[in-house]
Image 1: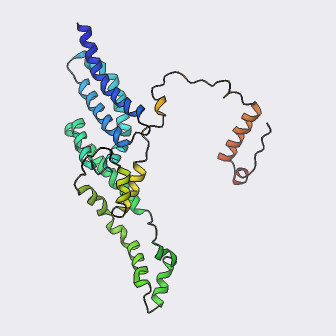
Image 2: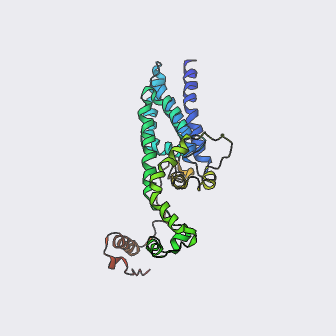
Image 3: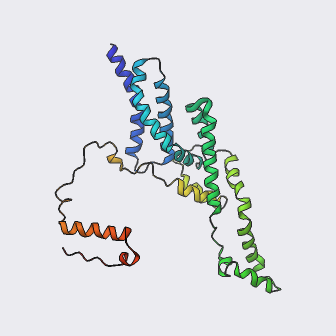
Length: 274
């Protein structure tokens, strides 16, 4: 009976791992937001289990906790930034989950995420904004001097207005992130299209929409779903190892020339005779 009891305990701790694995293997492209929900719960369960008074539970979860904690420390910031860009969660889910995991030290890790999203936002603000068609056709800043020479404002003065927006945008874009974070959360409806929401709101949040596009497109894994739990060693078959030595030498040399060679060598044509 004691052995059966341990089997039940073992299954209870394997179940969350199994559920998380299902998300990764059954979903063609699992998002970082979806993965964050699973990972923070695994991190919390493993942390609690290691401190259990039961030596069997503590010993069972020790190695698992080390693996999960290593992944969490390396990827939690990226996953958390993706959650912040979801209008259903924003910083609220980060605060909630981090408080569960870190307890009294949660404010330190929450501040790391908050500083990270603001620092990234400032980098995007520093990027040049695309010119409106009217301003671009008039030659940008060069048209400003032309307008000073002319006593009549053409285009209802909107060309100068475009230049004014471009010059003063950096002073006001900071509030764009603060406004987004202060707004109330959206309802957690099923099948919510977060990228579609940012596309619809790109006029309201021009800088944040670019951030969301880049952050939410980060893959949670570079491994194909069907290879995540493929433990068999991969070997070169006869077909993949059937290249002639001359061909292999030509490919290696070409790669070396293109990567490390001079511009003249990079533009040279490499002729391979099969």
